[in-house]
Structure formats: C-alpha cells, structure tokens
Length: 112
Length: 114
Image (cartoon, rainbow over all chains, first blue to last red):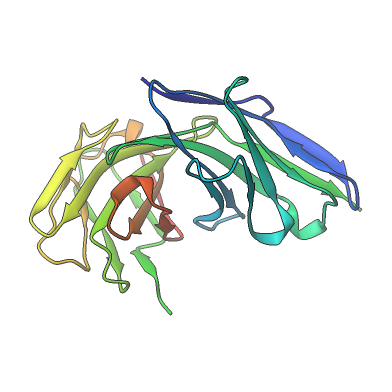
C-alpha cells in the first residue's frame, strides 16, 4: 500500500523569504512522486515530477523538490516566495497505472 | 487551447435526483479519470479509463457510474444523489502511461446535494 503525508496543513511566509512544504511518502515499490498546485476555483497544475532520473527535481516557477529515499521524503522548496505563490499544494505518489494517492494538501499564505 | 473542459461548473441537486457531469478533452489522451475533492482529504480517485470502451474503479467508486464511448469524452453519472456526494469533482487526462504520467485537470464541478 502507498500513502502520502503532508506534514503541515498551513504554511505562512513573508514575500521574498524561502518556502518549505514537507511531504513524506510510503510505498512498497519505486514510486513516481509529484507536486501539484491548485489556485482558488481552479484545477490542479503540475509543478514537478520525480521518476528516479535525478534526486533533485526542478519545476516551474522556481520550485524544486529533493527525493530522499532514506527519509522517504519529497519536500518542496522555493528560495524566494512571491505573492502569486499563494495556493494549495498537493504531494502525490503513484505506483503503476491505477494507484495514485494525494496528500491532504498544504495551504501556502504569502504575506506582503 | 481548451485542454480538459468540465460542465457544469456548479450544480445543486436534491437527494435522489440523478445527473451527469460532463468531461471532454481535446489532447487525444488515452487515459482519463474522475476525482472528488473533500476538505482536508486531498483528491480521491473515483473511476478511470485507459481508452475508449475500457473503464475501471478507483478508490471510491460507490454511487457513481462511468462510460467511455469516445477518446474525447468521459462522463460521470450519479444515479441517485446522496448528501455524502456533496463535493468538488475534477476530471483529468494524461497521455499513454496512465496515472503515472502528469495529469491535466479541468477546473472542477462544484456539486451540492440537499
């Protein structure tokens, strides 16, 4: 069985400061891992994807995530937050063609 | 570029009513899926399809039916709506490789069952 735990339901940062959104996963096999972002009243948009090619994955809008197998973590980071980054972020684990599990989400607030 | 289009955007139903949520994609994707999003629970997979004529159940299929007669369309049917089905529903599609590939999402249908 596989599962995802997002360790923070809400993260608040000031504009220009670093962002860290934490995700731990559980999977019996080598997983594919994703981060998606959801802006209000919109569908989810892919930020980045890990598929074992490299442990540090770069995504869109300056986000990146590091896969750490020993810690079963896939934390999302950004060096400098922008007001437009305020949204809900989902960590997702996928194994095979029909099993995809979403974390509960982390709401990111960016203060001016 | 339309991508994934869901209709309607909002709907209010009474308990016991039926309705169909529509989903269409114009990217010639083989894989399509339906999710529901509830507060504090992320998205949960309802049904999915790997191609026309092929559908299968996801994590929470009870109370929902699907069919896939064309590559473009993947409607979700509620035969007898229940208050527990109040949720936001998302349709998604992806290229060959299925759920392990990046998903393209519609903007959602917000459904309330009274």
